[in-house]
Image (tube, rainbow, N blue to C red; front, side, top):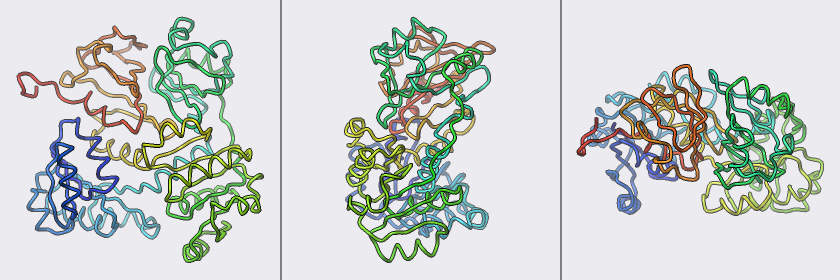
Length: 455
């Protein structure tokens, strides 16, 4: 499968990282030759230097033979034009990153007029995840997500006190009909394994047969929790802050945005209804206190600086704000995040890449998927006889710590697997993986080879 990525920025590079373990021929285009040379030394991709929106360049890279083209440069206009040109030149599927609010009201027209298959807005995606957490409390419908005879439930560990302090091995011996596939701890999703212990303040994600899960739900009282995000403070009036404030105001929340740039404040005031826009330094704690930080139900940090986002989120948590959410783009902060006690930390790059990969994989490979707190993805994969995982015991797949096979649907049978379970042709495999490592799934779905020739 031939994939073209226009733009070697953060999102373009994350796409390359996610796709390199799959069965893809990747071409990366950017106008920065030095950057492309560095990437070519690290990844197995073909790099081309040039202007992404020129027809000559698109013809040069044989865009008419391309299966997927993703235009993710820093310019909306470039992305729209490049994707449109590529589609008209014969590319099968094209997508463009579009971020500006002015484009959001005319997405349908852009798709139809420019013949673009998919528009991706990272800021809109992450603001949607934050909204889900604040307003829906990330409950899965009534606390349960079902697919045929299997169900996933989330609940506070305190609701099942007899398992607190247990390792996963001990939990399976007590409740063999279930498998814990994820733990939310201090704002971070953990994919647990045998020796990991359940702690009192954990949120548990558990999978099992539907009937057994519904029985358990009566015990842990996993019901829909109504939102109490009446007062929300947002630090940073960029695109993420804009989309989130707009949606929360429509819901009926009392929203304050604190933004340092006076010109941006004027823009926000003109564009947003029923939102209080305050021109000031969000890092000024006294300003936050004066603006009733202690009375806020939720506090969201989405400036362009990860360090500031985390420190301000920690400040809000120390002031007793119930829901504290932070936007962080750098992977290097993972370990720090888990120690800060922030409710949830979201990475817009991870969420965007997961969204794009669903289009590449198609419904014939990934039958369904759902995000867990925007940090992990639960997906149902069709195990055809051509992919790597088929015919192997789970223990022989050598799954990394950030992935787990949660269940297998084999005909009418539901299997909660162990290491000796062998994946067969035609199985529907329920797998959970951290979104930051979602490229690993491409390796599992890579075609098997014999003597170097794909089957």
